[in-house]
Length: 184
Image (tube, rainbow, N blue to C red):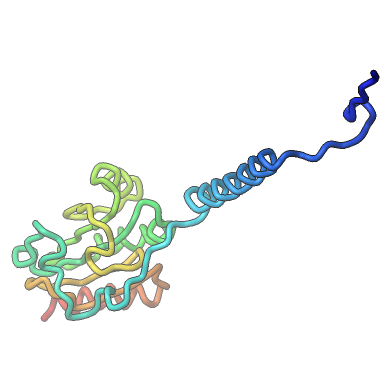
Protein backbone atom coordinates (compact mmCIF):
# COMPACT_ATOMS: atom_id res chain seq x y z
CA UNK A 1 0.00 0.00 0.00
CA UNK A 2 1.37 3.34 -1.05
CA UNK A 3 0.81 6.30 1.26
CA UNK A 4 0.96 9.67 -0.41
CA UNK A 5 2.31 12.54 1.70
CA UNK A 6 0.72 15.92 0.87
CA UNK A 7 3.78 17.89 1.91
CA UNK A 8 5.97 16.01 -0.50
CA UNK A 9 3.55 16.49 -3.34
CA UNK A 10 3.62 20.28 -3.04
CA UNK A 11 0.09 20.67 -1.66
CA UNK A 12 -0.27 23.30 1.06
CA UNK A 13 -1.59 22.47 4.46
CA UNK A 14 -3.84 24.81 6.38
CA UNK A 15 -2.71 25.79 9.87
CA UNK A 16 -4.72 24.35 12.68
CA UNK A 17 -7.01 26.54 14.77
CA UNK A 18 -4.48 26.59 17.59
CA UNK A 19 -1.72 27.80 15.27
CA UNK A 20 -3.95 30.57 13.92
CA UNK A 21 -4.87 31.66 17.46
CA UNK A 22 -1.19 31.65 18.48
CA UNK A 23 -0.24 33.76 15.46
CA UNK A 24 -3.03 36.29 16.11
CA UNK A 25 -2.11 36.50 19.79
CA UNK A 26 1.53 37.16 18.89
CA UNK A 27 0.50 39.94 16.51
CA UNK A 28 -1.82 41.59 19.08
CA UNK A 29 0.79 41.44 21.85
CA UNK A 30 3.43 42.87 19.48
CA UNK A 31 1.15 45.80 18.57
CA UNK A 32 0.31 46.53 22.22
CA UNK A 33 3.97 46.36 23.24
CA UNK A 34 4.93 48.68 20.37
CA UNK A 35 2.30 51.23 21.39
CA UNK A 36 3.43 51.15 25.03
CA UNK A 37 7.10 51.56 24.09
CA UNK A 38 6.37 54.45 21.73
CA UNK A 39 4.26 56.24 24.36
CA UNK A 40 6.82 55.63 27.09
CA UNK A 41 10.02 56.52 25.25
CA UNK A 42 9.23 58.56 22.15
CA UNK A 43 6.26 60.78 22.96
CA UNK A 44 6.46 63.62 25.49
CA UNK A 45 4.72 62.92 28.80
CA UNK A 46 1.16 64.17 29.00
CA UNK A 47 -0.09 66.01 32.02
CA UNK A 48 -3.65 65.18 32.90
CA UNK A 49 -5.80 68.24 33.03
CA UNK A 50 -8.22 68.27 35.90
CA UNK A 51 -11.02 70.78 35.54
CA UNK A 52 -10.73 73.59 38.06
CA UNK A 53 -7.36 72.35 39.36
CA UNK A 54 -5.21 75.02 37.72
CA UNK A 55 -3.74 77.54 40.15
CA UNK A 56 -5.08 81.03 39.68
CA UNK A 57 -4.46 84.40 41.29
CA UNK A 58 -5.84 84.29 44.82
CA UNK A 59 -5.28 80.56 45.32
CA UNK A 60 -3.46 79.48 48.46
CA UNK A 61 -0.31 77.37 48.34
CA UNK A 62 0.01 77.33 52.12
CA UNK A 63 -0.86 73.64 52.44
CA UNK A 64 0.42 72.59 48.99
CA UNK A 65 4.12 72.92 49.77
CA UNK A 66 4.69 71.86 53.37
CA UNK A 67 7.81 73.31 54.92
CA UNK A 68 7.93 76.49 52.86
CA UNK A 69 7.78 79.40 55.30
CA UNK A 70 5.81 81.89 53.23
CA UNK A 71 5.75 84.42 56.07
CA UNK A 72 9.52 84.33 56.53
CA UNK A 73 10.11 84.49 52.77
CA UNK A 74 7.90 87.54 52.37
CA UNK A 75 7.48 87.18 48.62
CA UNK A 76 8.32 84.02 46.75
CA UNK A 77 8.56 83.22 43.07
CA UNK A 78 7.84 79.54 42.57
CA UNK A 79 9.41 78.06 39.44
CA UNK A 80 7.35 74.97 38.60
CA UNK A 81 9.63 73.20 36.15
CA UNK A 82 10.85 69.74 35.15
CA UNK A 83 14.19 68.32 34.11
CA UNK A 84 12.36 66.63 31.23
CA UNK A 85 10.71 69.77 29.85
CA UNK A 86 12.49 71.33 26.88
CA UNK A 87 10.52 74.56 27.38
CA UNK A 88 11.99 74.74 30.90
CA UNK A 89 15.49 74.26 29.53
CA UNK A 90 14.79 76.87 26.85
CA UNK A 91 13.63 79.23 29.63
CA UNK A 92 16.76 78.74 31.78
CA UNK A 93 18.44 81.97 30.55
CA UNK A 94 15.35 83.88 31.69
CA UNK A 95 15.40 82.13 35.08
CA UNK A 96 19.06 83.17 35.45
CA UNK A 97 18.08 86.72 34.60
CA UNK A 98 15.34 86.67 37.23
CA UNK A 99 17.92 85.68 39.84
CA UNK A 100 20.25 88.52 38.80
CA UNK A 101 17.54 91.19 38.63
CA UNK A 102 15.25 90.12 41.45
CA UNK A 103 14.56 92.43 44.36
CA UNK A 104 16.35 91.47 47.57
CA UNK A 105 13.10 90.54 49.31
CA UNK A 106 12.12 87.97 46.65
CA UNK A 107 12.86 84.31 47.35
CA UNK A 108 13.13 81.77 44.52
CA UNK A 109 11.77 78.26 45.09
CA UNK A 110 12.09 75.66 42.34
CA UNK A 111 9.50 72.87 42.42
CA UNK A 112 10.26 69.84 40.26
CA UNK A 113 8.72 66.36 40.15
CA UNK A 114 12.16 64.72 39.99
CA UNK A 115 14.23 63.78 43.06
CA UNK A 116 15.98 66.71 44.76
CA UNK A 117 19.49 65.57 43.79
CA UNK A 118 18.54 65.23 40.11
CA UNK A 119 16.78 68.61 40.25
CA UNK A 120 19.78 70.36 41.80
CA UNK A 121 22.10 68.83 39.23
CA UNK A 122 19.79 70.03 36.43
CA UNK A 123 19.54 73.57 37.87
CA UNK A 124 23.32 73.75 38.40
CA UNK A 125 23.90 72.54 34.84
CA UNK A 126 21.64 75.29 33.52
CA UNK A 127 23.22 77.90 35.83
CA UNK A 128 19.91 78.64 37.57
CA UNK A 129 20.37 79.74 41.18
CA UNK A 130 17.43 79.38 43.58
CA UNK A 131 17.02 79.66 47.34
CA UNK A 132 15.23 76.36 47.73
CA UNK A 133 14.54 73.20 45.72
CA UNK A 134 11.43 71.13 46.42
CA UNK A 135 10.22 67.84 45.02
CA UNK A 136 6.50 67.74 44.31
CA UNK A 137 4.31 66.79 41.37
CA UNK A 138 3.18 69.94 39.53
CA UNK A 139 -0.48 68.99 40.07
CA UNK A 140 0.01 69.26 43.84
CA UNK A 141 0.37 73.03 43.45
CA UNK A 142 -2.23 73.32 40.71
CA UNK A 143 0.20 73.45 37.80
CA UNK A 144 -0.88 71.62 34.67
CA UNK A 145 2.11 72.44 32.49
CA UNK A 146 5.71 73.46 32.88
CA UNK A 147 7.24 75.95 33.06
CA UNK A 148 4.87 77.92 35.27
CA UNK A 149 5.85 80.86 37.48
CA UNK A 150 3.80 81.64 40.58
CA UNK A 151 4.37 84.84 42.54
CA UNK A 152 3.28 84.13 46.10
CA UNK A 153 2.86 86.60 48.97
CA UNK A 154 3.74 86.19 52.67
CA UNK A 155 0.35 84.56 53.38
CA UNK A 156 0.92 81.86 50.76
CA UNK A 157 -1.55 83.43 48.30
CA UNK A 158 -0.78 83.53 44.59
CA UNK A 159 -0.66 87.10 43.34
CA UNK A 160 0.50 86.45 39.76
CA UNK A 161 0.81 83.49 37.35
CA UNK A 162 2.81 83.09 34.13
CA UNK A 163 2.58 79.89 32.08
CA UNK A 164 4.77 78.38 29.38
CA UNK A 165 7.88 79.56 27.58
CA UNK A 166 7.52 83.31 27.66
CA UNK A 167 8.24 85.62 24.76
CA UNK A 168 10.71 88.48 25.38
CA UNK A 169 7.96 91.07 25.91
CA UNK A 170 6.25 88.77 28.45
CA UNK A 171 9.59 88.24 30.22
CA UNK A 172 9.84 92.03 30.57
CA UNK A 173 6.36 92.08 32.11
CA UNK A 174 7.43 89.46 34.67
CA UNK A 175 10.55 91.46 35.63
CA UNK A 176 8.43 94.63 35.88
CA UNK A 177 5.85 92.84 38.06
CA UNK A 178 8.59 91.53 40.38
CA UNK A 179 10.02 95.04 40.73
CA UNK A 180 6.62 96.68 41.14
CA UNK A 181 5.52 94.31 43.88
CA UNK A 182 8.80 95.00 45.71
CA UNK A 183 7.99 98.70 45.97
CA UNK A 184 4.56 98.16 47.51
